[in-house]
Image 1: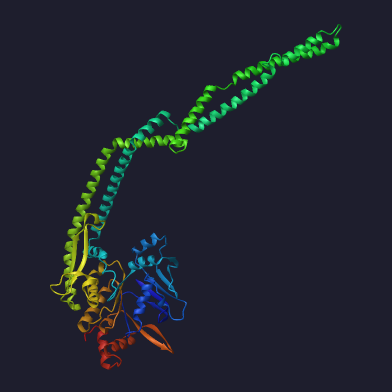
Image 2: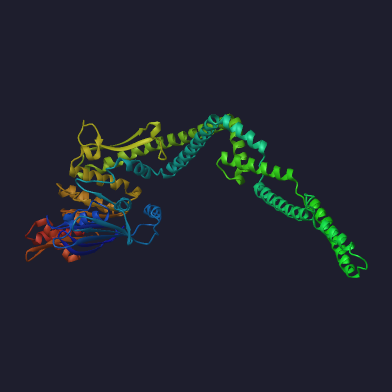
Amino acid sequence: MLASLAIRDVVLIERLDLAFGPGLTVLTGETGAGKSILLDSLGLACGARAEAGMVRAGQAQCSVSAEFAPPPNHPVFAILAEQAMEPEETLVLRRVVQADGRSRAFVNGQPVAAGVLRRLAAALVEVQGQHDQVGLADPATHGGLLDAFGGLDAQRQGVAALHRAWREAERSLAAAREAIAAAQRDEEFLRHAVEELSDLAPEDGEEEQLSAERQKLQQGERRSESIAAALAELQPRDRRRGGPAEALRNAARSLERLPAPNEEAQPILGLLATAQDAVAEAETLLERLLQEGAPDPRRLEQLEDRLFGLRAAARKHAVAVVELPALLVSLKERLGALDAGTGRVAALEEAAAAARRDYLAAAEALSTARRAAAAKLEAALGKELPPLKLDRAKVFVEVAPREESAWGADGMDRVTFLVATNPGQAPGHLQKIASGGELSRLMLALKVVLARGSPVPTLIFDEVDAGIGGATAAAVGERLARVAERLQVLVVTHSPQVAARGAQQLRVAKQVKGERAATVVEPLGKTERREEIARMLAGERVTDAARAAADSLLTGGLL
């Protein structure tokens, strides 16, 4: 419900803080006192269009804060979740308007778009005025209200679940058909790619393994080149340029030709012989190393070819080499889907058809129940209209089939509340057929009957009693009080019969100080209520008879 309203510098209101309780709250006051400003202020907090003219003269900005206390599990919490906002016990909608017309919106202190305010407010408060009715005047709400009146919510939820299942089956079927169509378009490519990749047979981790082995072989090749180069120094291919062994032998021969005795050459000859043996042994070891560590040139070539083939395939399919095995599996699956697609589509077609039949059966049962509930609702409304001076009017609850393209989670019906205000008149939409006063009372009658199923906890009626008096005004007041047993109701009224029904009464007045006027609102106690209702009965001069009549109204008596 609406817990409080704080208004700052809006038109004639300088500063106003109001608290509201449950049940029926009536706002009274003389014409022009500013009651409409209160509703406009609330509308501003609820996301209505902001205008620079709402800012009080001489002020830089105005602001309005409306605090609501929604019941548990109210739809408003789902909207907050959509906005990633944490739920709190109370919900404060706030609007600030600058003097140039620019505005800012807040929810529990967090800045939001004005559209968010409107969505939240639509779930929290409904205004019924003579000229700008919302809520019941919107045909989109009629189906839910009829279902709530008829106790059909569980059936409606079942239809919604079957509708989701049907749509999901249709989506699966459409996806399968599209997959087959895509596979058929790419069949030649798929078969070629699968054949090519199957021949290549890429394996998981193969590139890394081949690269490591290639690197090892390349390192072995460089090792062999180094050993061969060393061996070439000991065994030069150019025989004319002898190697170390030849040089050692030539040196020994030269020393051996020294004239005898040549004792001083003997140690040198010994060293040369040792060197020849060392060089011979080095040659032997190098030849052995060269033979043992020589890489297989064919294996290195094979590795190079394999890596080239894998990387070429990866470039062709625009994937990494490591993804080739998964790609082959995917392409095979697409081919398999193509080969087995006809059977799968047939199964999905049957599943979709079965889901459609289930939805149809449940939706048709809901339609039957709605037509029965519509008849009961028409009868209930027929009893409410005569006391409201609408005895010539008749409300029709039309349950009409929709085109299949418009079937939805709420079923196959278009539910519309229609009215004929005079006999022989063709029924039409509420806001198009009834006059302002008639429409307000029609809305009241609907609310009386539909209050049990209303998802909106706060209702506001703006001069629902305009143009009526006496017994009709009393009937309006009685029905407002009846609705207020289930919902919070605020009503702007000039009728004493309606005002006397309020659990709380607020008097709106205009005060003039110097050259400035200001609107003030004050809660009325028992004595003040008696005087205000007496004023409403008698006019400017309150008489004892008017006070007695006010007492009679306040105690439940009839005038």
